[in-house]
Image (cartoon, rainbow, N blue to C red; front, side):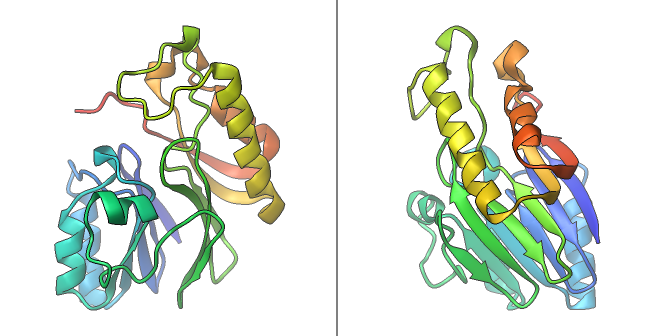
Length: 217
């Protein structure tokens, strides 16, 4: 099994049987395209997991790819289906907090997010677990200086309580994790590590992989 960082919040989990791609948006180095070409040659199943509808976590090319390749599958969140107008017959399942989706290669467990959509824990058939946050984070902006694009406007203390609640929810199902992909967002300034540190204190995790840490181009 290999975990690849692609760009921004996109990662790909690759094993001998399948390729799981989280929140694909851009592929500036062409690494993901090489992996997709190889998967097609090897007959691997490909799964695109979309945590939420934000434009920096979603690429509409996925819809065309999944239509053209019968072994490529779409797993979008409920809000992505609605906001991106995804035909309801295309996804193999809808990701919604509290649901578990089983595939021949893994199960994916969906939890609430402090933003829109969901965060997920994927459990491969060999037992390896991967947490992908999407935009689930402690968005603890200094001086409550929220960006103008923020959908939810709550105080930093309210945000922290909400985030810690989501972590406890995850820990009820997974007391430990092998891998966690977590936002480390530069916009939070001195608080950018607050959420990741709380995550590590709450859920013992072997490997932490930062994402969402560069200004969006």
